[in-house]
Length: 238
Image 1 (cartoon, rainbow, N blue to C red):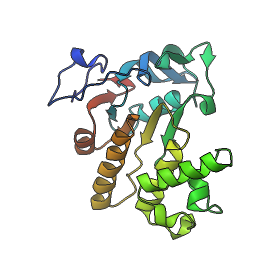
Image 2 (image 1 turned 180 degrees about the horizontal axis):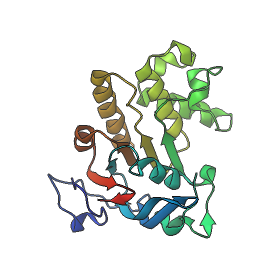
Image 3 (image 1 turned 90 degrees about the vertical axis):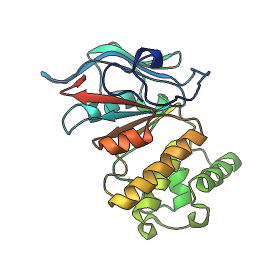
Image 4 (image 1 turned 30 degrees about the horizontal axis):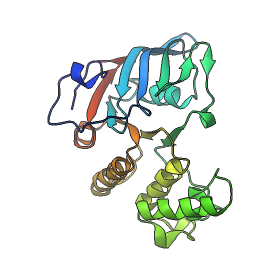
C-alpha cells in the first residue's frame, strides 16, 4: 500500500506487502491534474491519481480536505476547472466536456443508504433497470452476492443498518458499473459492525473485480481495506 504522494503507476510509489497482478486496464480510473472550485473558492488543486482496474484505493483525510468534492467530480456532479477524468479509454470530464452522471458508468454508495421506502428490497436493487427476465435474474444474483436472498420482499424500514447498506451496494452494482465510489458508507454504524461490514463489502467488490474508490477519515480502515492509500490535505494530494 502507498501512503501519500501521487498514486499513479504502482511502480512509482512505495509499497507495503504484495499487490495483486492486474492485466486488464479497461476500468482503470485516471484523474490528471484536477482542479475544482466553488465560485472563487478552490476545493481541489492539481489532484492526480490512478486507480488500477479491479483495485481498491482509499482516499484518506480530515473533513474539508476535498474528499467529497473529488467523489462529486468523479461522479460527474460538479464541473471541473482544469485537468481530466477518465475510465479506460473513455474521457468523462474536462473543462469543456462532461459526461452526465447516468452515462458515466460509475456507481455511488453514499453515507446513508437512501433507499426508497415505498419499494421492496428487490425493487430498490433493480431501480433504474428495465423490467424483464434479465432484471429479475440480476436482482437475484446480487441479492445472493450480498447475502440478502431471503429479504427481497421486505421493505427498507424492516432492515438493519448493515442490511440497508448491502441493498445500497447491490443497487450500485446492478448496472455493472466500471467503477464504484464508496462515500464513507459505514460511518453511521457502530464500531464492531462498521469494521465487519466494511471488510465484507470490500471482499465482495474484489470478487466482482470492481474498480473502487473508498473515501474515509479513518486511517485504520484505509490501511485495512485498500490496496493503495492516497492522503489528501487542503484540496491537494499530500
